[in-house]
Image (cartoon, rainbow, N blue to C red; front, side):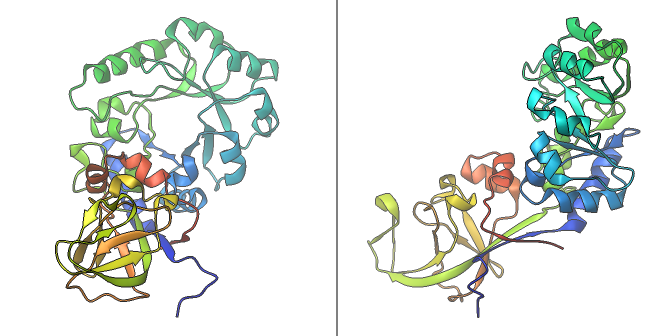
Length: 346
């Protein structure tokens, strides 16, 4: 019998798969050390658990977006370091000066702010063509006097094979970085790692591929799914031929149909892009999503399948396939998972 105190949703994260993915990414980076992005609460799966598992594998460099994430994560395992990618605002100075993480300085204002506070170990972002965060090549002189651990940049089109900006950014970073007084250089994200050791420099920063995403064809067959989402079946109903299911009446039963209603919806990150195109697994069978995804409920066609109230059905764990079906990115599928799950790591 279900425990009413527990949600009718489960999210299981496979720690062994996470570790295996990191080991593959480390090998693909050649001589570069392999770090891990654990921002957005470990891409929705749990940052603290991801850090602990990866640290046991030998990962020593971790990255979050904000100081709020850094504070929530807390002290790192022995020998591991944490970098905050969005730099340091005036409001961030107290945790930044506490020394448990390094800011990644992104602008002349952040550089000046860090120097005025006495400096200290930091990282720096160099903009090589993404035009998002980072110092321009003409602003490198502002870094004189800083204790820079890692100079990094970020690839804009690494998941697009053959895009000319990839090589242009790699070459620009290699050139500009010669003027940066940093101990290490870092450019490649998950997709960048797949492009080979030339993009690895001294340190890689995978994110998506750690958690089961496949950023490029080179990773196919090597990256294992990490997240398994399961929802409880809360009602079975018969829908006669010609009747419709869900908001907008977008699905019409082609025959008398056995429809299973699951306790999951777009409030849980299973978004409306899956309406009439998603699928869930019952044993070895795939059941198609029918009708629009609701806020809290999902309908699937279970005609001819042995399922019943209280059964747990699994969402498609294949992130590339789910992305193709829904039109959402693999990043959105992971980071959009809501807070109503029973979360556990194995």
